[in-house]
Each structure stands twice: as structure tokens, then as C-alpha cells.
Length: 449
Image (cartoon, rainbow, N blue to C red; front, side):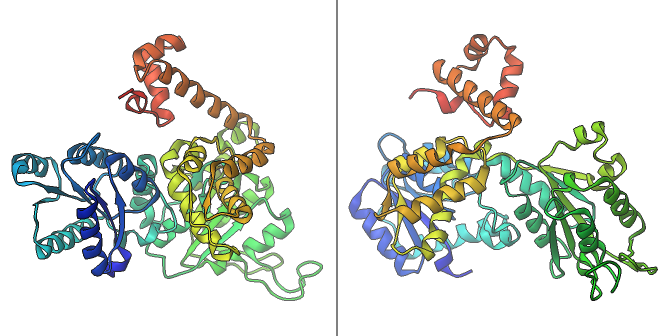
């Protein structure tokens, strides 16, 4: 990995030292981001995939140690080097014992600084924190704990051939996760083949999956091998499996059991070696109760279940995703939009997003297309969100959003005191804590400094 691909964050409230550090690091071809205090640093971390933090120890509001604790809490494993004056060596040693990668005393030697940076980046990569080992998940941008846990499970099951069922709301990124599992598996050199089971009528869906021989039906002017055979020794992704007709579910189950596929109109079967990943936004348990989804097929597909969180449950990823979409949308824009204003990012982070990541991408594309300025203001984001207000969420999505908004409100009223909030909500304290956990909320978020 070249130095140009590494992103370093320098945090210092001394402008002269900041300039010196930036000049030295950019001369070494690193990408350098800057912040003058801890709060600014955390904002940068929310929007950029930083590989290393270099921070002064003594700063107003939040010192280097407090920043390190925040970094470890929200971005576990991200290495940090602390710069300290001669009189603070004892504190620096204590910081190293807490897990800070290293510290340098001012004035520091350039060679020593670069050596520590190289070691920190190498350590990060060797322990799975750097990007070289994350190529399989490179298209899934996230800094959230809930996504890290999910991706850890996904990587763990990738090398086995067990079937995986990905559940999650529309627009949450189910196909991206399926592709990531394929890239992390032993089948990565073979084909990844995807089909949306709700997009085709039953006869065409059967033909697409299993193939057909010439003359099997009107319009079958040539032989078609089908997606199962096209995905041989690779991965077949069945999106929206909950919409598959019952009669076709029976045929799919037979293929999974026998590991053979018979094209429509043929008397011959072909062996297939395919890893199945399926996805749905529907409640398949309810589907089984109502008789619209076969129980035996469900257990074939749902060996491992991965539940993708809604975007609102990984709100810390919103600035990162918004800036990513801005960068890629801007490639085709007439003007050059460079960033969102802080107020605009705050608006995006606080929105409901019933359409999840797909809706966020739409809003970013709209703001870029209509922007006349280099920095997108909050007013433009507000207008884009208003234009999206016609989106009608499902009942479950609306209930989920109401529940989260209610929890946020009572936690703000009690300034982070969960016990008092539970009393206000007239809920058992244990149940209330479970609700907070379900929605990814922590008491510390609401405590007043």
C-alpha cells in the first residue's frame, strides 16, 4: 500500500507546529487532515477513514488523553501517537500503558516521527485494522460498532459453504453485504451471480434460475443455461427471496437438496456446486405462519442469519457515507462541490432515513445537482429532505422511528440519567436499558458537559 493511500489526522492547537507537521508529512506523500481540538478531530473521524491520529497532549476543552479514550471507544484499534512537552513525560508513559501506540517529546526528531508512523501503520495492518486486509469489505463504509460486529460475523462464515440469509429493510445494502461475503470466501475467483426474485413473473424466473432448452416454450429460440449453472463453483445471490412463488420454492428446494438442476423442457439434470446467499426485507417467520413461504426451504436458506441495521441505527456512519456519495456524484457534476457545511452534516445525521442508505444517496445526488456553491448549505439539505417527505415508510419502520425518537427525547430531558428516563417512560429499568441498546443509544451521548 503506497503512502498516498494512508490518511493521517494531525490534532494540535499550535498553528506553527501544525504547519510544520503537515509540511513534513505531505512531503512524505501521506494524505493529511487537520483539527485544532478534540471535538474537531472527532468530526473528521466521522467523515473520513483515518489510518492514524497524531495529537498534542495539552489542548483546551479535550486533551490528548481524553481524545484517545474517545477514539478507542468509537474507533477501536485506530493507532494514536501523542506529542508531549518535556514536563509531561510521566503522563505520556501512563498513556502508553493505556494503549497509546507511542509518544514523542517536543522538539521531536523528524526521522523518529516517521519511524513511529511507519511502525504504527504496520502494526495496524498486521492486526486487521488497516485497509490492506479489508479489501473484501471495501465497498461497505462504516465506523459503527453494530456494523463492525456484523461484518466480523460475515467474515467468519465466508469461508464455509453454509447458506446465509441476509435480512434488512429496503435500501440498507443487502446485496453489498452478499458481495462482500463472496469476496471474503474461497469462491472469490469464481462468479457472483445476482437475481431479484420479485422482478420477474414466475415462468421467466424459473427459466432464469434453472435454464431452458430450445423450444421449451414460445420464444425459447435457443438454449439458456440458467443462473445456477452460470454460478457453478461461485455464489448465487437470491434477492427478495420472500417474493418467490410457492411452486417455484418447491423446485428451488429440490435443487438445493439434490445439488442438480434440470432446465425447463429438458430430461437431463446437471450437477451444480453453488453457495447460496439470499436476502429479504420481509418477515419470513410470518410468511411461514401464513403459508406463503415454505418452512423446509426457510431452514435450508437460513443456516446463518445476518440482520443489517437501519441507517438510523448506525447514525455515526451518515457523515462518512454522505461525503463518499458527494465525492462520487461530483465526478459527473458540472461544477465542483467540495463539501457539506457542518450545519448540513448535522441535518443529515439527525434525519429519519426510512429509505436507508439508498435514500441518503438520493438526497446527496439531489443537493449536488442543484448546488451553485462549492459548499452545500443546510438550507439545501433541508429542501432535499422536504422533497423526500412523500416517502411512506412501512408500519414497522414508522414504529421503530417513533420508539427511537421517544427514547432520545426522554434521555435529553433527564440529561442522560437512564434511571430517571425509565421512570418518565413508565418502564422497568432493565427493559428500558434493553430498549436503549436495541436502538444503539448510550447514556453518555446525552450528558451535559
